[in-house]
Image (cartoon, rainbow over all chains, first blue to last red):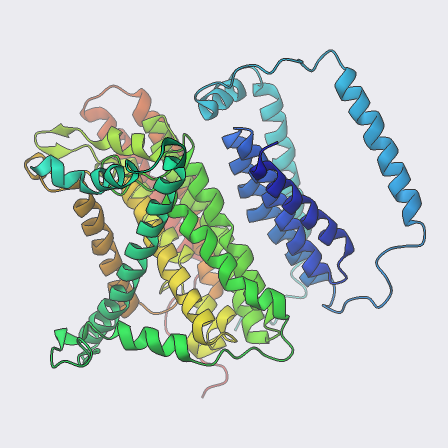
Length: 171
Length: 398
């Protein structure tokens, strides 16, 4: 394990723990952005440039902003007085540990995961693009369809119901 | 000789690093590059502030700063020494933090602004062989890291606990998110034609000459439209006039950095200008041929001089626009981004694809220009259709 890996891992875990334990929701969202940045750094250390940059672009540039806006628009900035941990937190940790163990066991013993890592390809972004346009074109199109549907749905929700309320609006 | 001056920074870097043991060289060379960026661009920033104040003064028919030259001498330098006392003033001012502010977030916001802005300089090719981190996906890196600026704007606006700051932050984020889309889409056309996301290769692609004129992407129909869209979007991204609503002094004081003073304010100021330089640098790299010369008989001028000249020329246009145009209204701003720039950028992507697949003769110039002109007319009329422009009627003022 290189020192860079240890630093980024510690930063990521630190951000994740803060995101769970802070009282103020906006602080939690900002701490989650730290965790996202840490994950992006981990991807970059693995040589996955495209995934790392996409992680920064989407998660820090868009999702963190979206969450922060949702918090601001839906509730006041007051933080709750009571503790953020519920009384049954140890049960949560137990369940999480069990799920992690089972998933880790399943991944490690699966035959689909190659034990030997393949050599890193040279122009990764070009390869990703080629694969997206040839082998994985159907999933790509389906994702595009789902996103378009979601966007139309959002526009429909945001659209004015009728023009009755809008009568005296414009001068 | 010309080649030596062209590569002088690269040679100096190799010379400095060659004294070190092999293992330390990558680290030392990155540190030297970081020091280079930290020295050069803040210096350009400080000179640009004077240039801007003098330029706007000139355009608005008044004097700009014209007194301060070299301190403790009688040399005035036409006021270009003004940035030194300004900097000292910024550094020695009291740092006032509102009592209700969120101390930690308030402290971190200017730092979080400056880090991504400085990171974007890593991928810009300032000259031949002068890109510091020559990433395969350099353009993606630039856009991804540049997008992280929004979170610092939010941090600054929210942590100040001031309604002007929060309003300014909301305006800034809405504007940045909206204009980022035409910015990225106009850059996509270049990626389609050059076939790479690497900024150095994009510049190499434009480094050819026909009849002595360079193959800059701005000299094609889709490139011209892409450049204009990119230019407008970069004005909005760097919060410059006429898109300076987030920091409109007369309405919301100074927007998200109302509650900042002293050195933190200076950091915001610096971050904003450095962000402007880097996005101009990206625009030059994508459309204006990066460090290449516009005509073949001027290729002997060093590449980094071309880059800086183009950058300062566009900075001058930014200053000119700031001194000339009034500020937009919020709904006009949003409508312009979503109803005009976004559809035009999408059509431009189609035109770039058509340009790539049509044969290399005059027909593709005609077809591509006609499509873009038609789209411009239709979208422009659509945007202006329900504006009810005419004599303004005031409901309350009379």
